[in-house]
Amino acid sequence: MDHERCDACGFDGARYDDAALLSAIRALGSRWRDLIGSAGEELRVRPGEGVWSALEYAAHSRDITALHAAGVEMAWTGDEPVFPAFADDAVDAAAAGYAELEPGEVLDALDEAANRLAGAAEVAGPDAWTRGLTIGDTRNDVRRMLEHSLHDSVHHLDDVERGWPSCAASRGKDYHRDTSVRYAALNSTRGARCTSEWLCSSRGLRRVPTRRSTATTSRWPT
Image 1 (tube, rainbow, N blue to C red):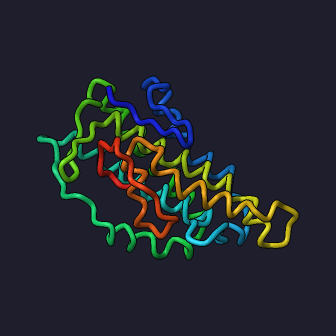
Image 2: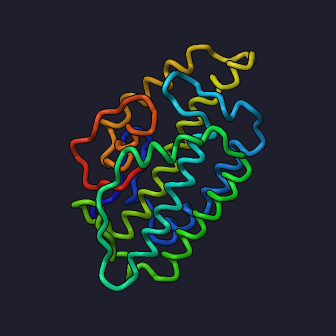
């Protein structure tokens, strides 16, 4: 099985058995809420030029989780679905209003999407996780979609944790002022170290430009 792996954040889908994978997906909502749920306007502060704010990352994770939930549900229906490749301008349009969203609504929707995704996979059962769908010219099975959805969200939780000190610094708190520079540098190189274009394709989301991985096996967005 070709598992999702990322050298940048240390994610390895092979470490999760079926039950642990679903449990980790269900926990995404609470993990995001624990990290940013009680924050104020610093949620909207970008820690560096071209780097998303915590709220933008959370909204992106909400949408990616919901997209994967829909994809997993469609994988069970008759012949496996086939869709055209995602266009970068469509992803840009979805991201344009992230900074203006209400954080509580974003977190509620992310939690709902995570439970929907895990619930759909659990009802079908692991024996059905070999089914999938095709995006562009690449087929994705359900197990890989589950791994990627989890990876995408925990990767961005790490992004937010790394950028958080500089968000607070911009409001005058006593943190290291070079955090945003290190944070931006991390994101600018991260794509080349991930073995999935799902992550690298976020180049269209107004982030620090990333290099595409040569080990890409999917065109599902992140």
